Image 1 (cartoon, rainbow, N blue to C red):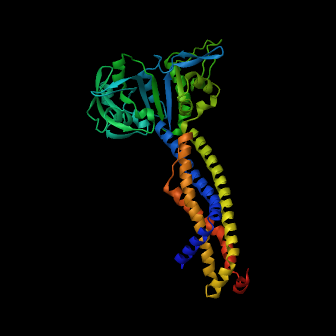
Image 2 (tube, rainbow, N blue to C red):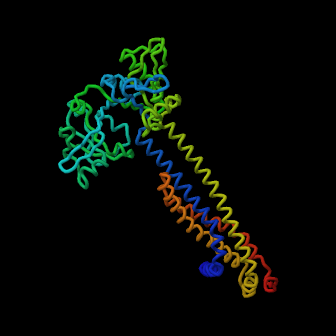
Length: 451
């Protein structure tokens, strides 16, 4: 019975292709909006989650150098990240603070990394054995170097997966050798990361890189709080600790002043001197990533509260913004589905009117009321499903277009496709029920007399 009703429904819809197409248009737009809504919403949330995981959720960055204000301009008090103001002893002191899980010294350099057959210009990070624990790195082959390698300044290295693909395509790099500044390092493993910069870098013991570069200072100390809620307080506590270790006096400035690129220290009447370090939170790090240094400094100088926000809190704000966008798209999708449903209802009511005599004949030869109901309901659902299928294709194309043009991540999942089909079928049933019921309630005698 259902198969016969489906054949009749398809034949009926084919007779009026233009009318059928117009009825499905609203459904197509509605379903496309539903699919696009879920694709963009899921993609955005996944992107935020990846950023949080790749950056870590409890990290702080203590950089050598700071910024100070000179007239109306922002000037470097001592080169941020390049000043000789942080030492391994500072990292040890920070590591001993309450609430700190890890404090990894960091020395970095941009240089050529050579193999026997290729070379790449990339970032080389010198860190300790705990550094990888702070990030969402997946060791694909081999292992990270141990503390003994740091203590002995061994020439060992771990490389990112992107760099591995460039230097050692289609082969396991573990045990292979690379050359940095004329010194040979043995690769102990390679890792994958959600962060493109991390995936393209070389990681070595910081003591080995210090020896290679002939330096004793650090560019940075990367700090991980034991709990995300402690990160802001630890950032505040680091400032007086390093001031005391660096023998600085600050009569006119507050402890929060060194936080972030916008944390500016003055040397006013109180005799204070600028800090020779900067504590950056994840929020300020994420906000200023890729910006010109002076632009980043200006932004954070005018956003002091950003210093007290960690990336986990920031990701929550971004997620809420994504939810707002999703809600807006949901409203648009709902309106489109209602319009599409009304179109289906109008088409079905017209079909009932045009086929009144047909209904009368069917009832006269023994068709039951529920048979007529089923026939018209199947037609309405068919309209909805066909329109939904076209809408899914349209939604998929729109998602790809948005991803390509606006660089907005989209994730078209099977769940979203299944939901879109379900919504299309449900809309067909809901808006097709009244015309189908009206057809099933027609009096056979009156229907046969209808002209």
